[in-house]
Image (cartoon, helix red, strand yellow):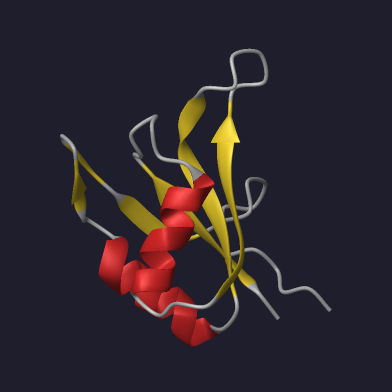
Length: 93
């Protein structure tokens, strides 16, 4: 089962391919990376969601990238939370 990771405070130039390259370089296994974009302008909103393959990959992603500097920003990386409950997303069955 995959788990969702939130990656925020991204510069607008960061693409899904860029994030995939970062993860591959660290040996982190993932299923999908989705950079969230403005519907009209298609400019990045500065955050992405990563579907990690295992709990170990979630931990590795958070450990490696949370608080990592990029341009004049500091990344924020954590397990994604359900917007309604504020708790971790329920596992898929």
